[in-house]
Length: 210
Image 1 (tube, rainbow, N blue to C red):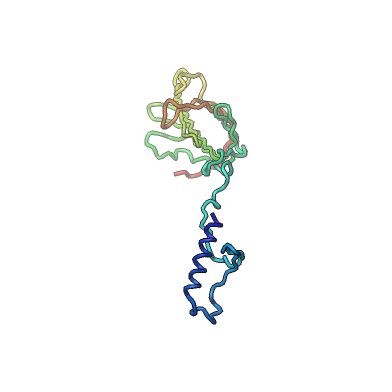
Image 2 (image 1 turned 30 degrees about the horizontal axis):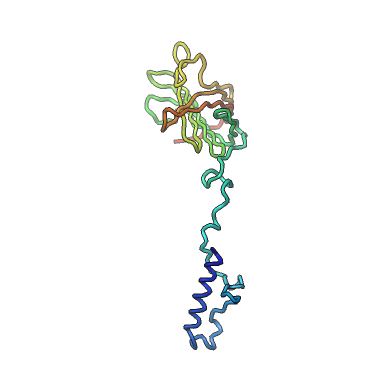
């Protein structure tokens, strides 16, 4: 592509100079180019300021970079924990803990809200007190394949959610550590689902998220 562009550029410039005729005689500022027998420009110095119009030069090979440019989805370092999705473990390396009661939703008091990122993956865990319902735990997971979520409500006999009744909640909090597992359904396709399990930590410090 660049060779064809340079040949065309050379022909246009040589033709333009020939058309100028005597107008360039004695003018040291006239453009000059070193060309070979085929008319190709042979000196890179003469190309200073000439843009390279080949867009392929800016496209990385397939498989390199993040999923946004055609590569495989990237995982995090695991510095703040891991999440396993259908048995595939993904590292998480950033966490934000939102201030309690920061949902701005009427009749919902947020007791715990933490969000994690790891490469192209995102995990959020919420514990809320919902008026006339009780304590709920929610899990959201997003990846290049889509977004999935699920909630469970505490009842007199245990917990109930998308996976049916259970004696245990989706996750437990022990100090600054959260462990658990859940079945999540697709936000756009309710028939799609993933199994997630996680073991993560969160800080004491909170952030005003809204």
